[in-house]
Length: 142
Image (tube, rainbow, N blue to C red; front, side, top):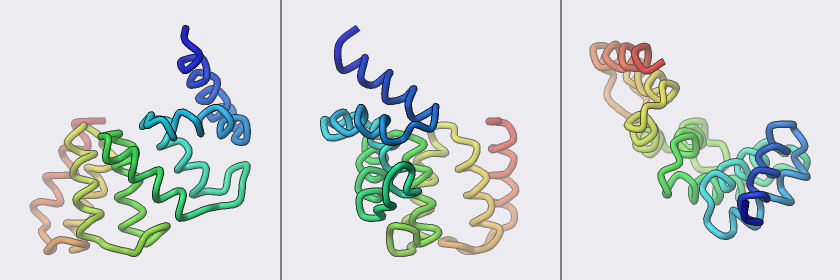
């Protein structure tokens, strides 16, 4: 196992064990080097202030970096940042774009959120039929 693989394993293990300072130690260099999973996990740490002070700017930067590389959980997370106006200015249309990307990769949570957005007319015209279609897709993907 290479040092990079070892550091990633250690960083993920620390993250999963809720040892967030340790996770940041191992994951930060990997995130800087472009590892999408490390970027996503750092975004979660920074957004929620886990083992550090919350930093919305860094959270948004890391979430976007991972999402743009196709990391589905980061795409979902970036969608929520836009939907809720957390870390980024609220933009429901951009939220929908990111949820659609995550849904295309099979994420049921994104499919449910798209259904909710169609049901409530958030970022898209309200469309009960499309809402139900997305809820069915989410159920099938679960």
